[in-house]
Length: 239
Image (cartoon, rainbow, N blue to C red; front, side, top):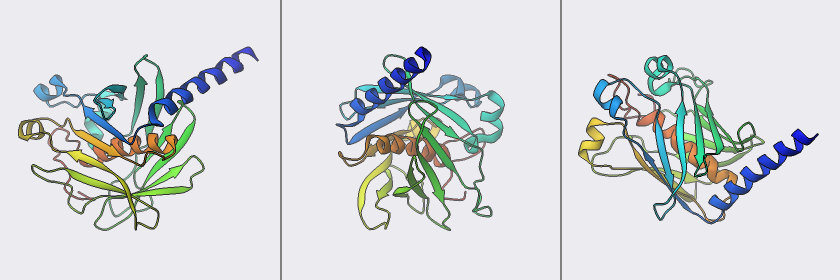
């Protein structure tokens, strides 16, 4: 009984921490760290990211938990567990991506991501929708109910400009935010796969959905902007 009470207190503390961090923000910055070993050897290492508020203050640190074979054999399509840690070193959010298809020939087995906060407790999902040209995703809550849509451009490759994935209402008529892959400069873009993202969402959006948006940003990064070995960055939804 005492153990259960301690676990409940721990979960409550994590949820309170997430609520305090997200309730008063409408913008998040995600900066991927450059891995020197990856640049020198070409072997894919676990991705690491800093998550910052609009003032540039780090609020979370995210690290991929994966093995060597999965990273280098499956490439950008690899399954992963991404652990998001607060400044106190406590894991507050876990992202789980299963191994799925990335081909238009298998529309029933497309990409998805589960967001857990605290770890082990699902709070939302990012589900890829089939479309012949556009990157499209549905944001769902913990009950698997559709909440928002994310729609990207037909060509997800741009030089000297940001690439925007718009966050829209379910009827796709109203834009409520965006996930932007920010141009990082020629050297960084050409020689590394370390990317910078900006996420904008309504200030009054439920804090759980804000966490799901952060998860969507990571899924988009892996799907479209992750280079592994001789595999080039994808320029469209299916290649």
